[in-house]
Amino acid sequence: MGNIKIDELTSILRKLNSENITEDLRREAMEIVKDIDPVELSIAEQNLIDEGMNPSDLRHLCDIHMDVLKGELEKIKTSLKEGHVVHTMIEEHDRILEFLKELDNLNSEIQKLDKNDFDRRYVDKVESLADSILDAENHHQREERVLFKELEKRGITGPTRIMKMEHEDLRAKKRALKELCKCFDYISFSDFKERLDDISKYLVFNLRDHIFKENTILYPSAIESIKEEDTWDEMKVKCDEIGYCKFTFKKI
Image 1 (cartoon, rainbow, N blue to C red):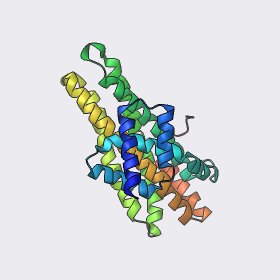
Image 2 (cartoon, rainbow, N blue to C red):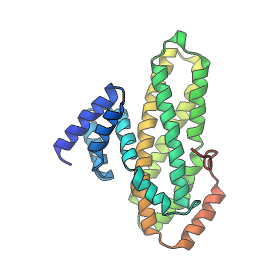
Image 3 (cartoon, helix red, strand yellow):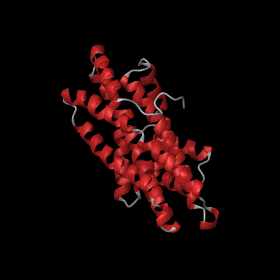
Image 4 (tube, one colour):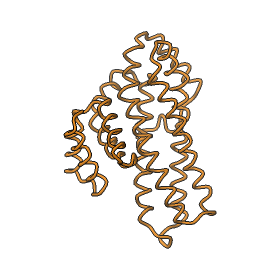
């Protein structure tokens, strides 16, 4: 990726993080990222971080790039029957992304409040979202114990190793969000806000980025490399044994 494209990305990111995200601004961002493939985006993100950009400030870019790729993701979903291992995982990702959007909006709202405007209902909302995000654990278990294992049998080990490492990192942050709500009565309001902002932005960016990589790199690789229908059927049985999330079969 050339310096010109990185400069364009940097410029649009500054706008996304300093202005209200209007439809015009969203269209401008989508025009810039629509021709960037997942690998290029990862390189661009790392370059921006190396230049001093806070990783949490990249969360809007990942969100917009997902919108650009919705068409490709829908093609994958429509090529799979409902109930297929990957079809279910993609739908679960959609729901997790909704939780992250709610968390991002709620955190932004809380950051604007002072102590007099704040009440326990906001903590309850954060805790409810933390519970929903933590409820994705069976999703990760099915990935690690079924999908990843099958890919590793076929020599695809690099991406699965990275995804498992990210799962561990994200688990810790999810638990930290839940624990923050539990200790609200024992810390100052300013401390709560600061820690909430840090954890929320970290989760929103990194979990979106994680989902993006699975949707656009790992899942297509799985569909391409696992051609045997009976293997997918066996994987589905194993997934059923592990179980699903409370939100898995709910309509979005």
